[in-house]
Amino acid sequence: MVEKTNKGLILVIDDEESIRDGCRQTLEKSGYDVVTAENGEEGVRIAREIQPDVAFVDLKMPSICGIEIIDVLSKDISDIVLIVITGYASIVSAVDSMKRGAYDYLPKPFTPDQLRAVAMRGFDHRNLKIETRKLREEKEQMEKNFITFVSHEMRSPLLIVEQYLEALRTVAGGCLDKDANDIIERCNKRIHGLKDLVEHWLDISHIESGIFTPEKKPVDIPGIIMRSVEDMTPLYHIRELSMETDISEDIPEVTGDEESLVRVLANIMGNAAKYTPSGGKVSIRARHDEYYVSISISDTGTGIPKEKLPFIFEPFYRVKGKEEKQRGSGLGLNFCKKIMEAHGGKIEVTSQVGEGTTFVLELPK
Ligand SMILES: Nc1ncnc2c1ncn2[C@@H]1O[C@H](COP(=O)(O)OP(=O)(O)OP(=O)(O)O)[C@@H](O)[C@H]1O
Ligand SMILES: [Mg+2]
Image (cartoon, rainbow, N blue to C red; front, side, top):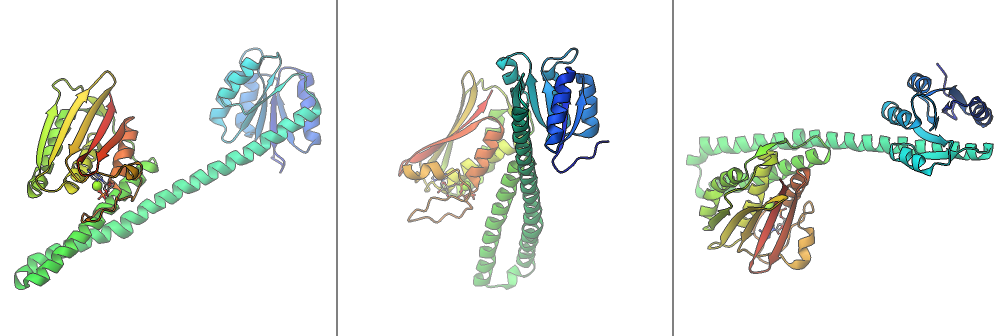
C-alpha cells in the first residue's frame, strides 16, 4: 500500500514505458507520490487498491480503452480527478471522455511544465470537489437535524396541547360559560393553524432534502378529483360556495403519488374556498392533450394583483389585502409546486383582481 504524502498520490496508466517514466520523474520531482500501470486492467486494479487522488489515463491502449477506465474509476473512486492523455490529436475523444467524467486532457507530446501545470490544476479541482461534497453533506445533515427538531420539538407538543384542549372541552366544557368556551375555541384554531404550518414545513423539508420521493403508481385523475370534491363539500357548504366539475370522459391515468396529488388539490381547492366570498363559485375542469393531463381550478374570488403573482409560490409569501382575514402560513402553494415538479409537471396561475383566479396543474401522460 502506498502512503499518501501531503502533496498527493498520482496514478499514471499508459502502455508506453517512456511516458510512464517521464511522468514519474517529473511528478516525483514536484513532490507527488507516483504509481504507474502499463495497461487498463492493471490500472483499474491498482487504482482500487491505492485510491489515488489524481489519475492520468492514456486514451489509446490495447484491450480496455481509456474511456472505459474513465467510466469505472469515476464510479468507483470517490473524489478522484481523471486526466486523459490523448496520443492522437483527437479532440473528439478527449471531449467524449470529459463528458464521461474526466476533468482535463493532456495531448502528447507534452513538456514537463505542461504536465506539472495540468497536475496542479487537477489537485486544485480535487480540493474544490471535496469541499463541495463536504458542504453538501453538512447541508444534508442540517436539513435532517432540522426535520427531527421540528417534528419532535414542535409537532409533538402541539399534538399534545390539542389533545388537552379537547379533553378540557369534554370534561369541563359544560361547566364553563360562553366566554371561556370561546377562549378554548380560539386556542384550538391557533393550534390548528400552527399544526398546519408545521406539517407543510415538514413536507417541504422532506421534498427538499430528498427524503420524500413520490410513489410512481397509476393515478386515476377523475377519481382523485371526485375524492377531493367530496372532502371539500362540507367546507364549501359552510362558506356558501358552489362547486362545478367538468371532467373529460377519456382522461388517461398518470404515473404518480396519489396521496400527495390529493393534497395538492386540497390546497388549491382550500385556497379557492378561503379567498372567495360567499355566494361565489369554484369550477374544476380536467382535460388532456397529446402530452399532458391538465386540471384547472377557477374561482370567482378576490383575485391576486398581477405584480404579486410571481411570488405566490415562494415559501411564506402571502398577499396582504386590506380586508385580509384569512389565516395561513404561506407554505401551501410552495408545497404544491414542489409536488408538481417532483412529478415532472407544473402549476400555473392566472388571476384578475375582483374577478377570480385560475390555477392549472399539468401532469405528463
Ligand atoms: N385562489 C386564490 N385567490 C386569491 N388569492 C390566493 C388564492 N390562492 C392563493 N392566494 C394567495 O396566495 C398566497 C399564498 O397561498 P398559499 O396557499 O401558499 O398560502 P396560504 O393559503 O396563505 O397559507 P397555507 O399555507 O395555510 O395554505 C395566499 O396567502 C393568498 O394571498
Ligand atoms: Mg393555502
